[in-house]
Length: 77
Image (cartoon, helix red, strand yellow):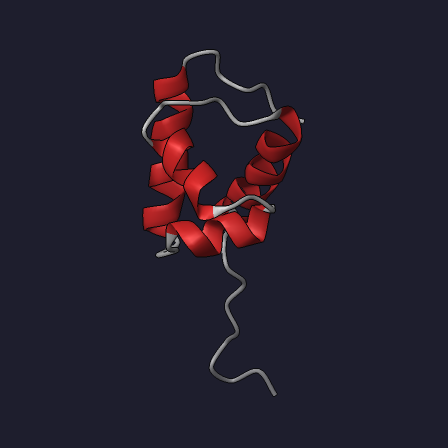
């Protein structure tokens, strides 16, 4: 599991950055990592820190999103 930053604003920036890059709504991100939209909003406004289990699921999603996409060659026959 990746180390969770201590500062709420650093966590908030990462949540917002991933959500915008992946074009996810707060509701959809919450559904993917198992929390409600309101919790995503509170994390993104730096009101709360995510629970360790939430951070683990978020970090896993963030890592998968950063992986390069596999591209198929045009002539793959």
